[in-house]
Structures are given as structure tokens and as C-alpha cells.
Image 1 (spheres, rainbow, N blue to C red):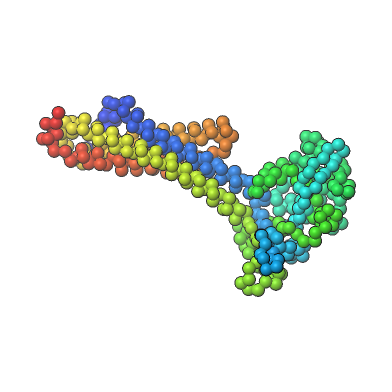
Image 2: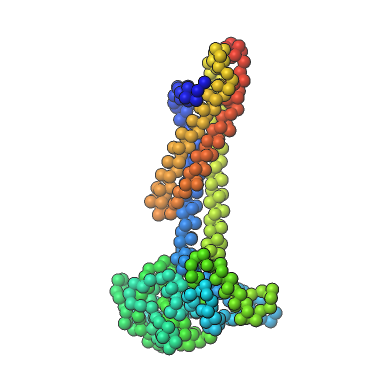
Length: 405
């Protein structure tokens, strides 16, 4: 019997009980839709995290101090004060590190006329905007000459500028007071959003690190060094060069633990998306249970169908149909239920993901892998759970089947 004839018979059989067929498909539709939706929402969460981290600078490599030891007690990570300006200068000689910025931070009250803001102050070098891939909205960033002279100049994050001077006002040339120092505003950064740590970068004020060290904090060491590799494929090599150079500069013996940490954006992405990846897999597994339930429903209905059509099966076998023909017919019926239900489920899952994205403003990324996997699982379930009922039908004795009431 040709496959077209088997398909035609299967469609006629399913069409006889439209309501039962639709209810059987419903389990598959819900299962596939749930998997598609859960995976889409999980992928969306991962995409947001990656975007936040990449927003810190595409090729950024950060160097943080390690743990200091006091009185034989090892303190927490970041307590060491061994990162120096000379370390940052040495990194500038590395071939795969074109941009390096010293980094110090503090928090101070900034006063402009009748407005004031308690904001983080980031001390950096002129390379900072290149390391962070951060354009300007108004004015300009400070220069190396400003850094060398420890000039009292600052560039504002857009949120601070809006608070102090009003929305969409260019404050370039205005004077603000930080502690007892009068500081000239020379520019405003473009909107950047949250960093990988969740901090709003637009609420920061940027000044030459020399100005922050000498006139605000009085600390001679650096809190971090921000560097950028020449391109994305050079990040691992640049990170290795930085690690080896600082290990040598800090006079650490071979095999001795580093007193600093080198972190790349890929490290941060992997660390922060591991949790969301696990959660996505868990949600997909829970949703996958409904696929199993849908498969069991298909098996149940196909067994009922075999019982109802016993005389029909016996008649077909008696007039010359082979057991393999009956087996194929019932397999095709089960497969049709699964594939049509899976197709509708994919569309429903895509629609549900888009609805959540619109209604709750939650990112949802429907991947082609999830669609193909769901469709493949639907087909597999149809074959797996349809085989036993089809085998039962193919194994009926024609004479006994014709006698069946």
C-alpha cells in the first residue's frame, strides 16, 4: 500500500472523531507551547545579562587587587593595595592592549547652584571612553594633559547632568563644587544604562584619576585597572599577557598565587548566565512533563481507536492487507496528531512569548533550536507512543477480529 493511500485513510479516520482528535492534540499543543515559551523567556533573560555586561566595553579586561594578609589573617578579595600607576603604565607597552585606564572610585556630594547630588566619582585616564566604548552626548572627555596636571575638570553621566542642570541641557562650561574644590564641567556622556554589577553608570561623574587621588581621596594606589584588547579574538591572549606581566612586576615566585585578579567580559558573561541557563533548563524540563502527558494521551486514544475499529482491521486483513500496512496506518495517525499538535503548539508558544514580551516588557528570544527541538520531540513522541497501539492492531487475528462485537 502506498504512503499516500495510508495517509488518506489516516486522515479519514481522524476526521470521523474531530472532537476527540482535537482534545488529543491539546496535550501536545500545551506541552510544546510551554517549552517554547519557557525557553524563550530564559533566553531573553540571558540576552539582557549579556547585553549589560557587553555594555561595559566589548573587549574590556579588568584587573582587580587580590586579598591582603594582615597579622596572619587573609582578608577578603580586593583588600590588597598593590595595584599601582606604574602597573598601568607597564600594561600600555603590551602589543595586544591598546587602551589602559587607571581606576579609583569614591562618592561625594556635588553641588551646582541650588541643586546637589551624592554621586559616585570615577577617577580614570583619557583612555577610559575607548575601554568602555562610550560616546559623548555633549562636550568632550578630559585629555591626558588634564590627567598629567590633575586638572579640576569633570565629565558627567547623563542622569547627574539632568538632575543638576535639567533635562537636555548642555552644562559644558558650568562650575560645580566637590568638597572645597571648584570643578569645571567639560562634557556629558551618552546614556549607557546599568553595568554588569547592576549599577547605573549614568549616575557617575568622571574625573582624572590624578585629581581624585591628590585632591579628594588622598590614596596613592589604584582600586582597579581597566584595559581593552585590540579585538575580540585577542582577549584571551591579552589577558594572559597582563597576568604574566603583573605576576613578574609583583615579584611573585613561579607557582605562587597572584595578588590580583584578571577578569574578561567572557568570564563575567559565563558566570552571570550560568544561573539563568540552569533556571531555563529547569523550566523547560518542567514544561516537558506536559509533553510526556500528551504522549500518554495519544497512546490512550490510539488504543481506544484500535478497540473501536477491530472489525475494520479484521476485514482489511481478511481481504489481503498485511500487518505492516495496518501498523503503518496507526503509526501515521499518531504521527499526524503529534505533528499537527506540535505545529500549533509552536505557534501558540511564539505568540505567548510575544504577549509576555509586550504585556510585561520582559525580553523573550525564540530560538530556532528550540523550535526544531520541540517539533522533533513531537514527532518522536508520536512514533514512540503510537507504536504500541499500532503493533496491537497489526497483531490482531483476522478471524477473531471479524467476530468482535
